Image (cartoon, rainbow, N blue to C red; front, side, top):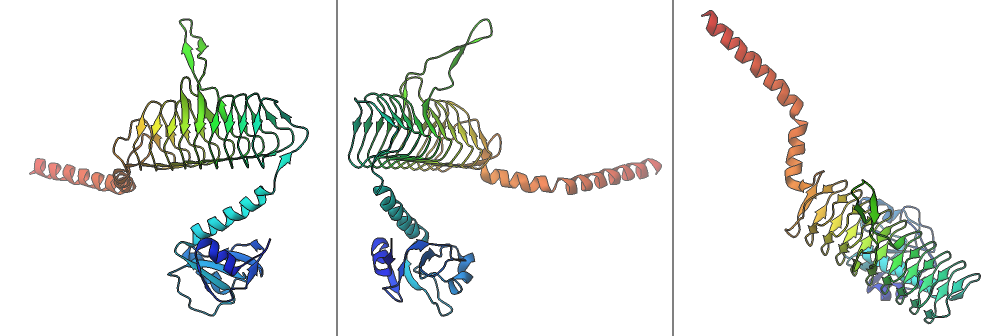
Length: 350
């Protein structure tokens, strides 16, 4: 597919500097893009490549100064990174829009309801009373259990497993091998030291515009629902336990884990490998640093914590600064102790 500068500028509401008929057919990084490719500049540390790249069209910020002559056509926008993301999303949508039909072998229950322009990849399984909305793309080896619902424009990449009764909203993306709706980790201790399984009869509800990375596991609720609210973004290799709620537009980085029944607010940011205990609350706008261990509720919005156990970020920085000075402080303390001993000895001798 080929696009010219005018078409691209129209898509992202940009202004053109240069040849409006300049065209591109693919994408490239600014440092090594070639003729016929589209690229962007958002990070100032790559500015030098603005003048050496062979890209035909470059998306740049409105405030970017041009210090040397350029070969490329420029499209100026308020936010180059977001604009480029919009173009990539449009390109991806055009590619997936072309995917329709049902590949064989696949199994689709006679009671399932399948919308228009749906794609079902080979070796997929769609169970009893499943609802599949319009323009859903189901890649090969996907399993969708009985009574599940997948709403319009959602993409399930290869190997995704959606257990029974789970609900997936509109415009959701779930990447390869993620499991939605597996049993929550519920076991009742018995007098003899064994554990009795507590049946997990709830479900998982994923609202609209959510993206879930590869190899993520989201457990179904014991009762009620494990809930991922609209706009949330989950990285790869994340564990979400039963009855957790994750708020609107919250983002969680890879290898983090959230224990059962914890409620996470809106616009929260959770770093990689962070761990959050169960039955606590994380206030809106909180930021949890990577590898932090959160053991208590964060009740004040926009709180920033780090460490394990996690505590106030500013206090942590001060503690780290003091920790680095400990060898010097120890040396000074020993010198003071020696001086005190010397003064005591002099006083005794006198």
